[in-house]
Amino acid sequence: MEKVFIGIKKETGHVDERRVVLTPEHVKKLIHEHKDIGVIVQPSKLRIFKDAEYRATGATISRDLKPCKVILGVKEVPAKELIAGKTYLFFSHTIKGQKYNMGMLKQILKKKITLIDYELVKRDNGRRVVFFGDYAGYVGMINALWIFGKRLKWDGVENPFEELKQTCTYDSLAEIKKVIKNIGKKIKKEGLPNQLTPLVIGFTGFGRVSKASQEIIRLLPSINISADELGAFYRKGKFSNGVIYIVEFKKSDILMKKEGGNFDSYLYRKYPERFTSKFEKFIPYLSIMVNGIYWEPKFPRLVTLSYMKQFYEFNPNPKLRVIADISCDIEGSIELTTKATTSENPVYVYEPLTEKVKDGVEGFGPVILAQDKLPIELPREASKSFGDALLQFIPQLVKADYSKERLELNIPKLFKKAVIAHQGELAKRYHHLHAYIDGKERKK
Image 1 (cartoon, rainbow, N blue to C red):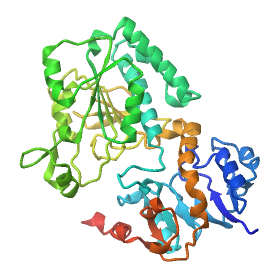
Image 2 (cartoon, rainbow, N blue to C red):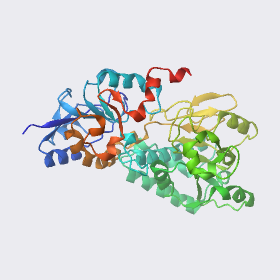
Image 3 (cartoon, rainbow, N blue to C red):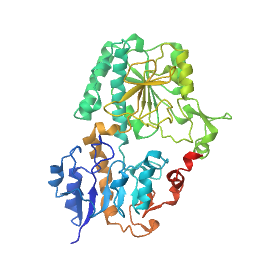
Image 4 (cartoon, helix red, strand yellow):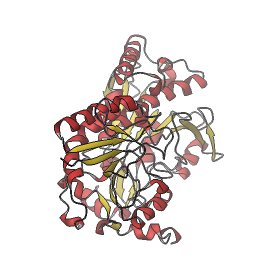
């Protein structure tokens, strides 16, 4: 029986990437159930799972992926490593015309490669099918609380969050949840410092990232407040120091028509330029902001540099200490997100009055957490979760005939709209990327 091979690529585009899309257990199951499928794994010393673990499943360990029909990765593949004529699946970060990946996309077209992007594999309701989003939310919220504790300590405020460490220093999510629950018990018993009361955390975004972030914060004693209630809540002044107050902002809370009137979801999707943000009026009430919103340049910003400069001019002691920008769009929905950060250097302070950026938690301005690869801090669990979702589609993906026209491809239905390029040609829905590849869009 002739085998068809799938390759698991070594992550070389990001030196701190330890995740995989299929764990050894997934590979073992795939090989056991499909005798006509073989797996080749590129050796890697960084990957969270060792080469020997893959070898034990029956996979071949080899640097050469040329025998593979389909090649799987997590993040972008350096242009020089792309193999002509292959089918690749990875998070390409190209559909917004991201400048830093246009060289890679140009080579994908030149080498007549088929590119399928995990980010675009969605159900009819827009929900992603294969994703790391839950773990971005978990890690983002955990690190936000860790950084909140460090910032408060620098401010001279003793607080229960000081006992929490960075996510990557723990062995598992379960271990971290136990620590956070213990912090919650301490808050309930001893209360928060008066300087922090009320401690209000605001969440933007409506998908898995936001939900996972809220799952972490609800390990602490908490009370929900609607955005409409927030102003009156402050004016009444009846706060508890034994709870965290949570505000989950809906689109109608943070967006409005420029000409006035109620928020219209259909109109916003069709004509986002007709809307503006009203989120900034809530900023004075928040201690931590967690941003998980999907954003494109056509959408309004939630937090602008101009507002924050004005806000800090008139507020010598603002409540807002941390902005956890999990979405991490550079100068996007949070304009203060001027750069992405890493696990090794996870935060910086943006000082609105001087417009300076200082790594660390010290300075007159909010601490910005803008890690663009948050799930790498829980690589083992994040990889298992991703592979659990992806594995069922692998046999059909690897056995498909990619010499056929794009519309005739016999790949899982959910993956058809995720084909950005096929045999070196952009799919019709992504033709706009030609302007970015050629540099014309950026010159406008």
